[in-house]
Length: 486
Ligand SMILES: Cc1ncc(COP(=O)(O)O)c(C=O)c1O
Image (cartoon, rainbow, N blue to C red; front, side, top):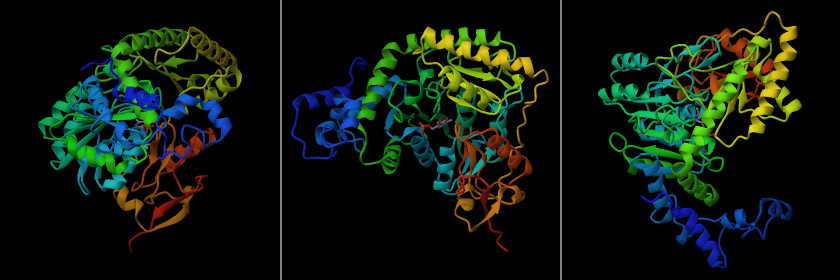
């Protein structure tokens, strides 16, 4: 495989150079038929590339030309048997991944800290989730991955499990022992599906956690756009042939994908793959070095603490992705969201996310020394300001006990429902989702019994100003609950 080639990107450039007369969609025809201000701002090259699946450019739904060649090169780069491009993010690839593995009523093992797209797939497929409780980190107030033992126990207990899904690494950059999980699941004849939204870079640097394909997983949805340099929303689905049939995956991907696929996004995946193979190692080495350096500096600021190997509970089982910087701010007596706001207002810094206790910054090797210095300056300023006043920190980590599933998410989603005040919903079976996005992990999901702790946690997030969403009522004052059958 010649990774210097970019078959799709090159085919697009050649096509543009031929300058054909366009009697086809898109109607803006190289930007001539669109808002002038927008056209001038975005630039001509991007608009020339904004094409559609005419014959010379191949078709993502049935690739036989440059898209096929680009996907084959991607498969080689990610050490998969087949790779499918997604122009609808990893969310859509995750739904396709789960639809490829389970049918209505099939049992699937999933961690409770799933991304909302996994929940969507559970509702669409009607699969029966067996939720496993991930390791909770009481210091940082976040959930890590699943333990090997919990998966082994569940597989032993439920002989009819059809798939195991793991999120690896997590948003906060913690990886589980995926190789062992794959070995155990395969011993039971069960495929392993990986939500690898935060793992593109793991394919290109040895000191990062093991990638899904290297660990022997059967299928993995990977957000190239998050850490690998493609345009936003351009992701891939990698498949290892065997338990999962790639021909069937192609059909399902096609079912879920728009027929108007963005060639800008597709070409960006082709170009990203070339760059990752040729320069990924060096880029991620820089990211690791920079993140490690800044981590040490931040750990030296009183009141701040970064998630790293030293503070990770159970570091024998879990591995850290050094490019993620999770900074706990709770000892300053303030919320992660407050720090996000202050960094934005006073220092013109945008972080990846914040929650009640932490902020998260990601490193990809594209940061400048100046960016790093500004982050440290901002954090030092905030920490010095707050540590003066908050002798006794008021923020302590509280994680609600995980709710109990009463009926499947699909049953709850389609059930007859009534609207009740959230504050009065204890004991009811909720029919919708409550989550903070990002990271998009449900506090409650359809089918679970509402607990007072889950309500308190939701209200605490709302009070802190965090983006709580998922319910029909945008204010989350009311929720839909399942009407009792009697
Ligand atoms: C764990 C996890 N899975 C899946 C996704 C979905 O990825 P995308 O935004 O590419 O659809 C995200 C997005 O943040 C995520 O954090």
